[in-house]
Amino acid sequence: MPVPTDMVGDRIGPIRHEVDARWIMAYAAALGDTQDCYFDTRRESGIVAHPMFAVCPEWPVIVQGRELADKWGITPEETRQSVHATHDLTVHRLPKPGDVLDTHLTYTGVENKSPGAYTTMRIETFDANGDRVFTTHQGGMYLGVPAEGEDRPAQDDPVVPELGPLPTNPVAEVPVAVAQGAAHTYTESARIWNPIHTDASVAEAAGLPAIILHGTATLALGVSATISTVAEGNPERVRRIRGRMASMVLMPSTVTVRVLDVTPVDGQEVARFEVLTEDGGPAINQGLVFFDQD
Image (cartoon, rainbow, N blue to C red; front, side, top):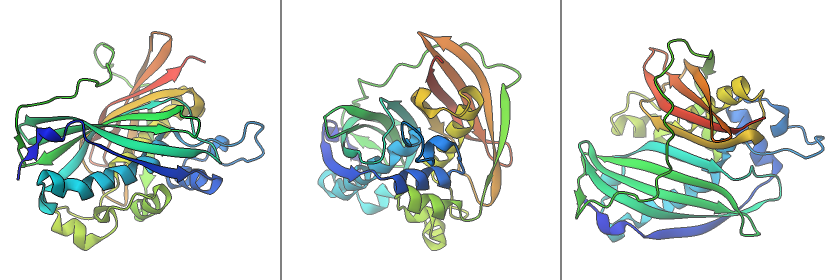
């Protein structure tokens, strides 16, 4: 069945999570990011979560949306054809141990594109006081599955600043080793369970050459390297992260994070980056990290 544009406006959640130090540490450790701010409980202000930790409370509402696909006439086979395409995360503040977070999802757009139905969602996470913690605008593609109904593109996509042509020489190139078991480690640490990342038979049935690293893990590796390069490892300067999932990362392999440039925009510093696979192709492109100016 096609993906109906009538799903725009449907809402899922909230789903509640309690954040503890163990979860914060495990997520950073899965990325190989050893900054003290994620681990050293002796810090006067305590530890904080990695900016990409946002995906941890977001995953259950995404799964719940997939489980409700019957309502829209989307078959399990068609659901398996959906891939994560774009990610745009606003960080209002970083979680700390003891935070209670409520996350809900709203479908904001469905439209036909050449590969299939392109869907967008807004995922919002609030703390116990009702204050925003994360806001994510995420896009996905149902490969080979058309949309049904008049196109309803999202009306609230965040604006991307004009940054000019890409530079010839990057600010930094950072090689990052991706171990054979990286997807399993990320699965358990992020609590994102999708068998194409852990079960070779499921990955093969999906047409993949092997299990692959999560797109959000690849994006997070790029973000960590960019934070280290631009902000001396301080994640609390991060206000927004954007990237496009371009291709899969196999394991074991070495990816390369290229921090392309840093541009001042409206009181912030915007770093452009990309993550390249071992063969030099783009795994993440159009990457941006927005930093508060130091």
